Image 1 (cartoon, rainbow, N blue to C red):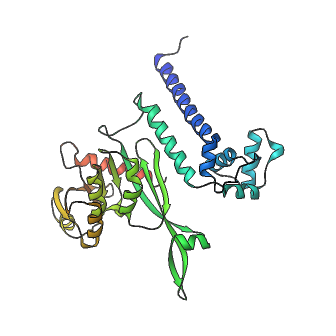
Image 2: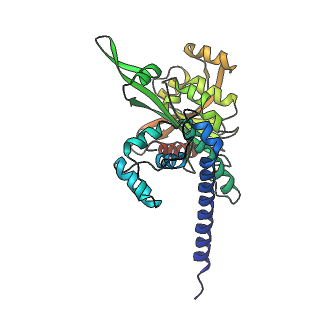
Image 3: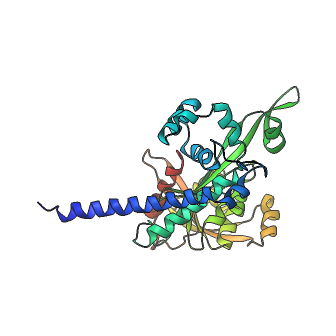
Length: 325
């Protein structure tokens, strides 16, 4: 009997999806086999100048696949899968080979995959959007680092004992396409102010008109004014301790309001540096959570008819998908 139309359509969709995935993998493979890629992303000029068991391609593929098993077991499984059981390297050799890869390669590959995804899937409506816009979530987390001379020299140190800093910390940041599950940008750097991560990284992977959903850590005048200056819209949770018009709204009875906020003294230098406005109109909305608590979000989406409070709650809810990333 012939397959029903719905089943046939689903099979066609699966086949098309598999074809696109294969094209992305082929692009990655060709990139990693390109001599220009090797030359650009090796630490020293002499690295990978000779063909070895641990080639540039194999090392990077191992890095990308991650290690859910003990390192030597992961190597055994990988080389068995490619038919080179007799040439399995030691875990020590692989660890040394990883040190020959510039970390910037991973960012390059991530950008390559993202661009390929949007190119391949946009043509048939496979890229999800909200009101015709892409929605990006942005968040950061502090990461404790190994105590080495390199980390002590580069990253912020916290905690003291006998006047000596004990622990190095970095700020990991990620910009994430919330509707398509695509990481657009990820960085590991010093604990700079959250607004600076918007300036230096996430802004580069967004376009005018797109919406960026932010957590409380980004709820600063400078970051919001910077996004509006570059024609990005934002939705941001707001802390209750914020002074001025935002605090007055928290304490007042209105469910939503458009308020004008002024640049605080501590961010004047940032505003001057980037030529931003000194006063900014934002819409603030109270959102009731499932447990009965009230949350306030601030947004540049001022039109309450086009974007009602329920839509803002949905946007903010999508951002939680970035938390376990």
